[in-house]
Length: 364
View 1 (cartoon, rainbow, N blue to C red):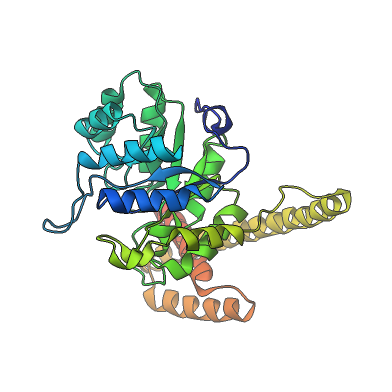
View 2 (tube, one colour):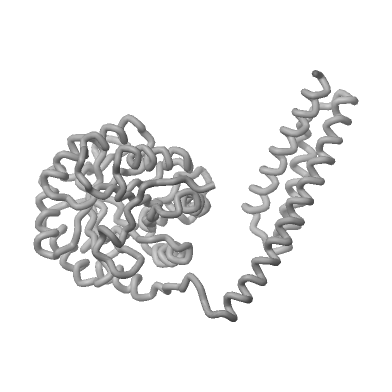
């Protein structure tokens, strides 16, 4: 199912001729010198059209660097005037919005901590008022698609049509090489729900490590995301915030030069072969759904049998053994452990619910 949003296409308001759109700039504005040196370095890169910098930094605990505040907006004014780059800044409340508008900021963005609060989103929208300013909405910290959608829909219903979703990864308890788990299935689902909504990717926050950024940039393009936001600092090692995930302008230019822009479609021979393979997938999907349906009928029979013999539904020992065996089989077939486990958990959850339904029907 797709949902309707009133979205103004990027090409109608953003001065770019090709995708992806590239946004670059430091995590935090630290000094006028740091901002201007970084901006001049970035302005030499043709692909970059927008300069970003954090002015107000929401920190988990007080005492850390929380941004330079309003004076940083004057530095962004200079960046716009002297380089021609558009400038964007994060806002978290109506005062931030008003000060950003007073200083001619071109684009606003709403961060991951703010997007979870419908009251804050409403107040920010009201503070922007009738100003036709573009707004970027980052995903929430937790992998909650509905919360992300809610913020986007709320702003759109308030009349804002120049909207961009920004995928910055999600906090997750499992350890991995990423600072924030990419969970690409979530932005993909958002793209499916809102086909006309541009989605940018923030590899810096996903990776937390500059060495991982090039691969994540390429992944974003391969998934047909519309833009990239890369934290770029003239001297990352001396950055006051997130030094490990920032790159120099020279590194950014190198990363961008190595990106492969793949075509959405190929020649007739390619299209015919692709259609043949997709047809094969359609057949396999039908078989897979048929097998799952037959499996659930067996599960329901088990439910009746357990009911008749006064046996509990959940059999943990059986579940653990089944999971171990299926994962081993899946790995031998080239499937990842995470994929098999996620699939088994979904099937098991459906099976448990079906057995509960069977017992409830029997009792009624």
